[in-house]
Structures are given as structure tokens and as C-alpha cells.
Length: 92
Image 1: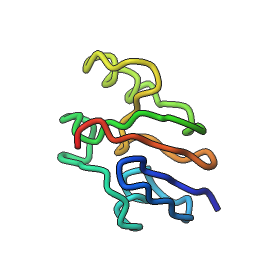
Image 2: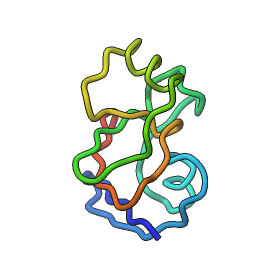
Image 3: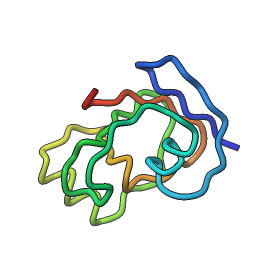
Image 4: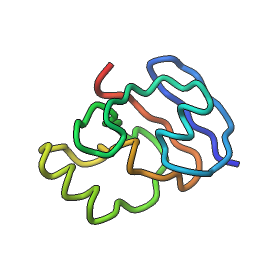
């Protein structure tokens, strides 16, 4: 089971890998802010500090490009886990 660490809270949780990163974080009380939950608002953007997330879908890539996000930034509502990851929330 993968581990998620959110740097701002220094909290690490071992989680079930089911659903989006946002769903998994919400279910495990990890502090990632969110809004629309569909990729339209950009509130749930996170920077991957260590580890990897599953490859971004074409939809997520287009949304990130529209928000002019730098490399390593992902949308928690669209991204999925691919092992252990350390994140930094951008919109705290």
C-alpha cells in the first residue's frame, strides 16, 4: 500500500490505492484543499516533491497547460497514485 506525505502538515499516511489522489487524501484526512473536484478550478493543484503519480491523462495535461502549471504540478482531483509520494499543496 502506498504512502502519501503532505509536506505542510508533515503527515504521512499509508493508504488504499482506490480513486483519485484527492479522494484518497480526503478519505485519509490529508490536507489538500479542493473546490470543484472536476479539474475546472485548479484549487487542488499539488507539486510532486518525491515519488511519482500515474501518468497524467490527456484531459489533465490540457487543464494543467491552461493553468500554465510548471513541471511536477498535478491536479489531485485527476491524478492517481503510483507508489509512495511526497506532495506540497500549492493553494494552502
